[in-house]
Length: 222
Image 1 (cartoon, rainbow, N blue to C red):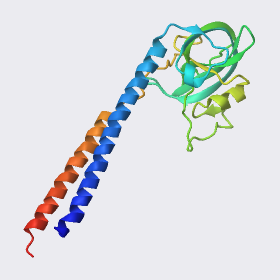
Image 2 (image 1 turned 120 degrees about the vertical axis):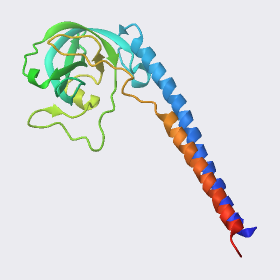
Image 3 (image 1 turned 180 degrees about the vertical axis):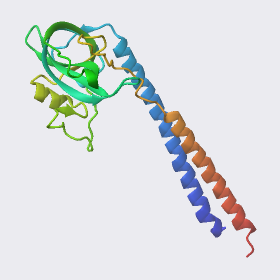
Image 4 (image 1 turned 120 degrees about the horizontal axis):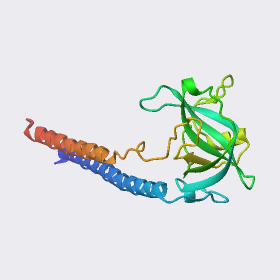
């Protein structure tokens, strides 16, 4: 019996670990579903006035309405859209009637239209509050020569534009031929069901290999 002990122990531990990873993925799938449902509900809500002090945990994706003036101070972030030529995402300083300065992600402009003037003008912006997490350790800093940014970084952009770190992603056109890039859930996949199936199949394979090994041990000639 001693010769069966180690294979059985490894088999039980392996199946337990792989099965637990499968159930963990099922839990993550449910958490992601709840998160996406909450995100879609906030996006679809009727717009509310911009909070005095927006908070990410409470207000992320909240639909808001803001009246004020585009100042003509903007940043361009490298971006692309399906069916369009390469271009940039325009993020511009927006001054409210009470003097507050925030940022508005106005949307996408194709490369050939970047030089079209975008003068300051009054506007009403309908959109969603957002704190995008685009940057990572491999994200390069803005190009010093062209001023082009490679990812959205709300605090850094706010410091550059001299605004508060509040970003509204416009969901309706704001003029100047800029196509809005509204917040949605299409870019947030929920693939955890597939991952769970993979872990469960690995657990079944591990169990099968363990049984095969035990059979080989049993039939081996002493």
